[in-house]
Length: 483
Image (tube, rainbow, N blue to C red; front, side, top):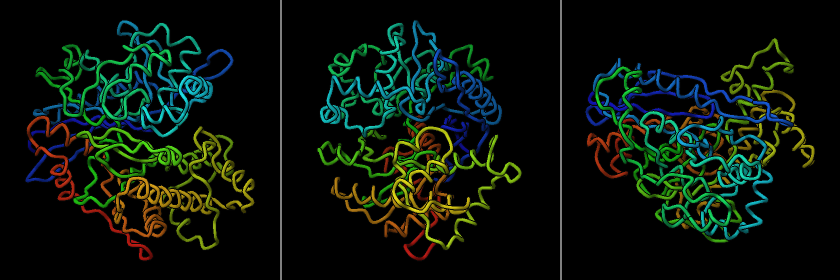
């Protein structure tokens, strides 16, 4: 392998450290560390709060980077990506408490407080964001109402927090900043007027940097922990994991939609400019920042969280059959063999967002809508995948109509690209060819931006995607045919 970079990729359920480089024009990736990301519930007076264990994540990141530099002595850079919207509050550089998890149920009053000051239509015109009750702007309003915002002099989104602990430098990377609801839709700058109206200190977040910017070098103490005497820079990547994943979509044309499929499904198209029409707001589409100033015009659709949470219900304490542990490959095979019609439910319903008994919620939804609920585990799985595929099809049709972009092909990247049944159902329901892969799209996008910043990879986003297309052979699903 030629000169390498280290991608720190933090997902909602696990984190990885991956080494990546170019060899004969092709990407080479190697996993050097994988670790769980398990949220914790903490007692908070009359409630329990769901939080991220960011200090444990950081410890695991350091361990992974130490292994990376032991295995490769020419690591040129480190880049960090994670999920969006969540943040830590700090005062004088010290974290004030464990960051809240976006699935914590504390933001309802925050939504009402924001909308009392800024009506939804005006808010969309300013930030272009899909309404999600856990958007940063609503979480901050909940913090303000609880009195926890006042002591803070800084907020750092999760990947920026990790980068700060590594380098001592505080920045806000643009693609993740675009998910806060406080960044202007037309320019990657903080909307100071909006912050003032909402009572958010205008200096709460640090300045915005774009992917490819140098954040800083590892602090001497951190370099010692990692085990390197070299100056090792941390580079800003598309730190919102979906921004990195979309940068790695191996498309060579302008007629493709993408589905970044994992815990969530992010379904949309890449544009040059945001779409801020009332029709777009009514359809609940979002305009998020992408690598090289592109716009990720998409909708968040509930993803494989529905499946993983169902399995957790079946296998956990008090599960329906504790002697029968769920095996995903077996469940998917059984679901593919289901011939009885299964209900298609609204996968975007907010009742499916919090942790809990997902099969029971699906049953309740079906009964409320006069549909026969799924009866077996296989039928639950088939119902989930059919419902996701139906939501994908509806969203892609809307994206085409609202953006004016013709869509002929659908690229599925991320963990869901390995789910052959989901990919086949998506092809059938969208009526479009589906190309599945790469699985490691987020890490690839992270690596490519770093390689380009280090002068190792070519300059344009299209050139980077050609590297992915050369390296990865997607699995093709044609409507009505299968893989």
